[in-house]
Length: 152
Picture 1 (spheres, rainbow, N blue to C red):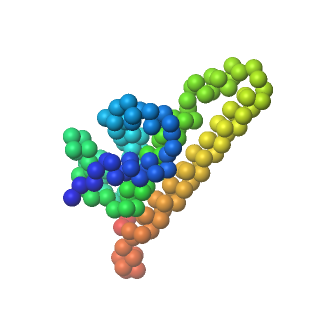
Picture 2: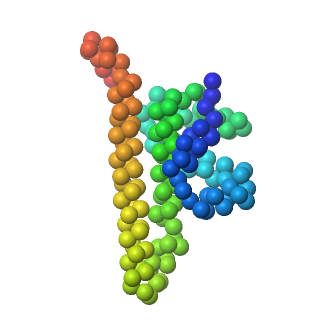
């Protein structure tokens, strides 16, 4: 049984609130889907300890070849959010506006917002690393470990 990409993206969209994404969806649901799938695909290589092969996919059906469990879908959705967040941080228009704006109060508020986004990115990465660790521990064969087989 396969897992559709939308299972991952829909879970990510529970967290993301972005009027630009809403506008893209209103304009073209197909373009929106392609755009969101890009974030998900960028995040896949970071899920390094996934027991399923996330690179085996059916691009026509827009699904993973394997059935992902809820933990795997959750971690991938968080990576989708992280990749979206990076675009919010690396938005050149925001950085250029901050440097060109002559009003100190406005510039400081933009800089403060950027600092908060960077902190959120770091916190999200830390949270994802913990989720990957928990996922790995959950799937250890403890019987083999007790017998000295550490799978190395």
